[in-house]
Image (cartoon, rainbow, N blue to C red):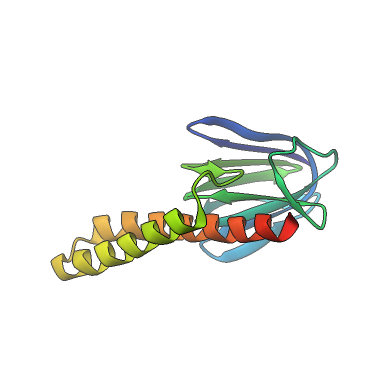
Length: 147
């Protein structure tokens, strides 16, 4: 199968893969060869895939799977072609665990304040950011387990 992951920063990954696991609004879905066509919303979380050839060293491997954090986006599957477009994607978190945890606490506080104002759009944006930070913390944890 051919997988292409892109964000506004550019192409994150492009190549042949054996399988893909994607966080969606309906839960995590596995994409295997000759998957039925679909379009779905990607939610913030950790996307993982098994490449046929090993990509660059920047990617985090665990049991032959590459792990990447993704924010909100779309996945389009057309049999053996998978295109994932996301608003943000992180191969290896650049922030420390402490900074990410502080960002998470600040966002949780901001969300509570926004709930009092009933600002639904702002709450949704903050929740997406919070979910993305939580995915980056999980990715850091995986990275720590590997080294």
